[in-house]
Picture 1 (tube, rainbow, N blue to C red):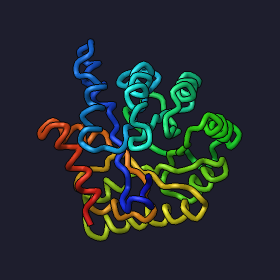
Picture 2 (picture 1 turned 45 degrees about the vertical axis):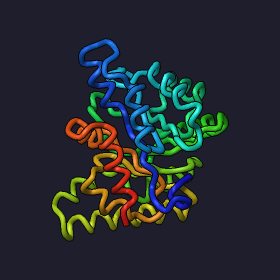
Picture 3 (picture 1 turned 30 degrees about the vertical axis):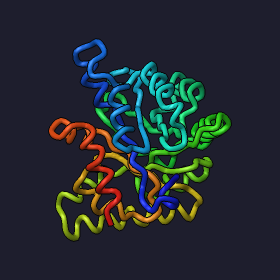
Picture 4 (picture 1 turned 60 degrees about the vertical axis):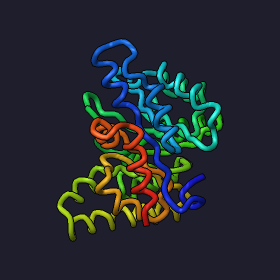
Amino acid sequence: MNASASGRPRLSINVNKVATLRNSRGGHVPSVIDAVRVCIAAGSPGITVHPRADARHITLADAREIAAELAPRRGPVEYNIEGDPRPDLIDTVKEVRPDQCTLVPVRPGEVTSQAGWPAETSRDMLGGVVRDLQAAGVRVSVFVDPEEGPIRMAAAVHADRVELYTEPFARAFTFGGATAQRAFQRYIAAAELARGLGLGVNAGHDLDLDNLTLFRTLPHLDEVSIGHALISHALYVGLDRAVRDYLGVLAAR
């Protein structure tokens, strides 16, 4: 089910930060699988992971374990694996066949994603990965800035969706008023272009309970991926309540 069917965007919860906390001490606490179970029990229709090459949070082993955990729930709950198209990640995606793979560029040394794929990205490289994943039955989303060039590039490589990089919107939203509205208009134009090119529309990065009150109204929005803000909120209210708070904002009119 996507936004057009439900009337609201789906929430996909990124559980990377649970793994970050686990890895800071070693061992298995807190359990990423337990966190996934709480998210699903609270009503989340999606789980996202981003296994990086340095394995500093979610590992490829985690990605496989989560796939096994979600297998009986396929359909109502979607699984999204995101990351750069390096061979070990792509092999894992083809092995576990999540509902979606979001292809994200990675810059050396970055703490978190800083930008989407540029317009000049090699069509041959990215298009080959897209075709390979689609042949395995995986929906492919391409992480892009809300600009015409990158969105047209994503359409040219025959991606199924784009994920709009929303950190610039989140930053502008803190200023409120006309600044927030101008930023949002940029995303409206991007979403309209993507839909006109036959692409679904996802979004993610720095979305939270405050700025979602505006961003949830984006036309054609299929899915939002939220991790850091939701897990941070959970430190104070608990994970079950945090999930329900975000679902409540997305459901509000």
